[in-house]
Amino acid sequence: MLTAFLSALVFVIPLVTSYVLPHEANPDELYIVDKARRQTTRQYIVHNQCPSAVNLYIAGAFDSTIPHGGNVTRVLGTNAGFFYTDANLGTSTSEATAKTAFLDNYYYIVADPTYVNAGISVAPRHAATQGFCPVIECDTRGCPNTFPQPPTGGPPPSSGPPNPPYYQCPFANTDYDITFCPKGVFPTLTTTIHPFNTVNKCMDVRGAVFANGTPVQIYDCNGTPAQNWVLTRNSTKVQVAGTNFCLDAGSSPANGIGLKIWQCYDNLPAQQWYYTLDDRIALENQGFCTDLPSGNTANSVQLQTWQCTDNDIYQVWTV
Image (cartoon, rainbow, N blue to C red; front, top):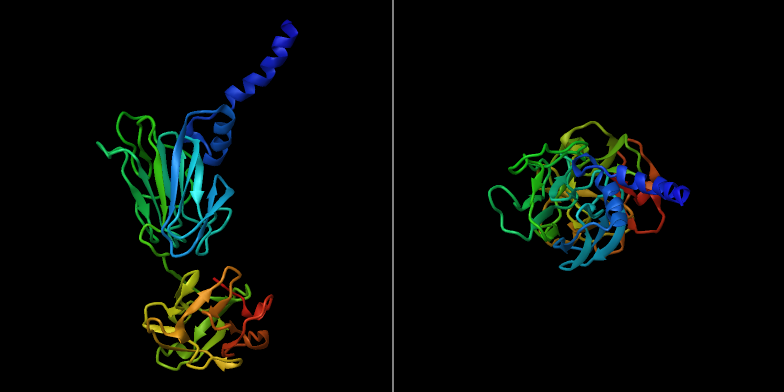
């Protein structure tokens, strides 16, 4: 019997000693430990106010797709790991993707300082009191009181609230609302645009002449304002950053029609694009895509519209 007891103890001890205090742990690892140990659970109500459906990931795994205006409720452990979406140029692995994490009663947001793919807010279902339980939000790049990358340490023990970017709601049975796009829109992205992952070539305004009718071409990337664009995933304008000029396909788009910039107008079909999940910049509901003629990456080749075709790498544009 003693032998059996010692054999069982070999399996029990690692489970106990492998537990790491929340402020020292990776949240995704603690999520797994939490489930195995059946610790206290709470409700996480995840809302989608983004202009399109979004994929929800929890602790590194795909959970569900939430429609615009919808929500899902998940009952999980208090160490639930990261919540995030890959919408609007985010990633399924959470790299360069805004996310929030929960470690016992602590919560925080991680956001790339240069780009937020989808705004996110966290609201404890408990009144804010004496610095505890505040609502936190990040919906633009450079938002304050967020971590630029997942923390490896944690706040020291304290009788008061932790210093931001950590936040705490140390009250029993507190549930949380998590909202994607709390402002109702995706953040915009200022970026260079490259043909089929050719990172040394950029979409360019010819001669940096910001005027109606200036051709849009391919050119060596050079870091000038002529190569900075603003767009979002899904329905979007493709606007020259810092100007009122947009990528324009003209009034009668067809195969071989050269692209240009033109003063931006709302709801103008020639400027209403759709940046697809497979990286095509398509005229919305018109069947034509932004195309690099014959895949020619020589400087000064003007871009054109061409019928959208599946698996055509000359219509792939990456940021």
